[in-house]
Image (cartoon, rainbow, N blue to C red; front, side):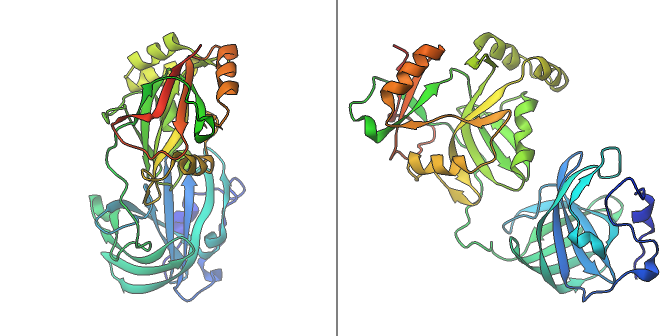
Length: 356
């Protein structure tokens, strides 16, 4: 049976809420068929995959989570064995301790062993969120870094791969439409148009043409907030002063692309990512969905703090125009409730209306 000496060495009894058995002799034994996956918000977000084997949990830290489809191979760092009690652990590991940060159970269930050897572990998961066959195999340096891939089709037969790139849909300048009830109304922010691609807890930013955007480390933290959600978002980056966009302050942020200086500037001039659309979500393209339905999906996402959903008001044309005038906003954007998202196209389904 594998021992837990390394596990104990890395942890301090009384300083961490993690289970720390006194000795191996008292360890319980199971049927080598339990697994748990914990989402671990440590220094870097990752998912800890733990498989019961020989009285312990054999563990891999997977930085981007298990791949949802075959063809994608992800890093899986083999870590020290954990006690079986860890299969029910969730909580806050104090900062300064090994693995310090928030941890919670992302999925758990049983697994079947297909193959278990020194260099390869193949299992079939039966969980609430994960169902299917995965293979862990040795990869890089000194045998510590393993890799993991899914070896059968996605558990969702309609799953679509998250696109590598998308361009923004653009509004046409116009006037308030006469059929107000068929439209929804948002404020114009006059910020920096930015599309966000989130996969495996990591966020990439792109401009309206699909080219990478540098800087803005405060926006990139949204990736960790999204956890395992795979999504494309559309919105604008703004600097708000007294609730209003400050264009000059935003220009200062845009001009700084050096990572260290961007992080320092973010403390003085924090930005807000105002999100107004969802283009792809967890294996589903949202492009053909009507705007009204995409907004419902947006409302269910964890957007708060430095990122927020743009307020949208169906049918409330005059009220939004009046509010824009009173609050000194640059104008209003009207969007047809039934409009699909057309990447890279300028369309009359979105109308950009200057403030009266």
